[in-house]
Structures are given as structure tokens and as C-alpha cells.
Amino acid sequence: MKKNLLILTTLMVCLVMIFALSACAKTQPSTTAAPTTEAPASSSETTKAPEAPVPPAVKRALSIGTGSSSGAWYIIGGGIANAVNLNSDWFSITSEAASG
Figure (cartoon, one colour):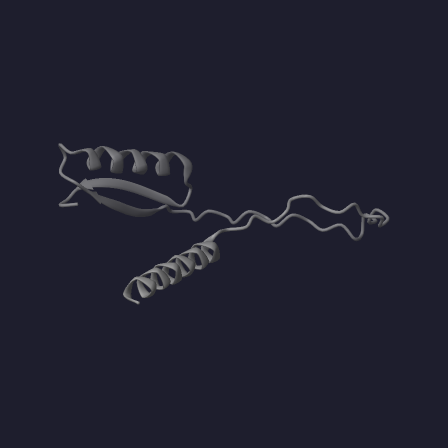
């Protein structure tokens, strides 16, 4: 009797885990588009692409607290700050040694 209960409980736990994991699986939408038979739009019906936002006149200053200056996290924080400074018109970032 106890052995049957143990087997039944184990099976139920396995089923619950399978359903929980399958519910977390991501499905990717299909990228294939169906062919259209519509006539091409006239020039008055075309839409413009949205304009990119204009960056501010002054960059916003931010700082990243990293580990001690002799540690690996200080180097990683400096690399992140450098990458953002090279590629952003919005922020100016510095890395500072902190307690992590």
C-alpha cells in the first residue's frame, strides 16, 4: 500500500513538473508572411518612418559603483562606462570604486 502511494505521488510530481516546464517554453512567431494581392499604395498613402528622438543639449551624468580598484568588477564597470560614453548621446558615465 505504501509502495503504491509512493509511486503514485512520484508520478504526480513528475506530471506537474512537465506541465510547469512546458508552460514556460517560449514559442517563436513565424516570420513568413503570406503573399498579398493588394495593389501598391499610391504616394499619398505611404507612411513616413518615425523620426529618431533628438538627444538633449547636455548629457546626463551617471556613475557606476564597482568593486575595489584592484578587482575585476572595477575593470568591468570601466568597460561598461567606456562603451556607453562612446555610443550614447544621452549619458556620460563614470565608474567609481565602491564596496560592490
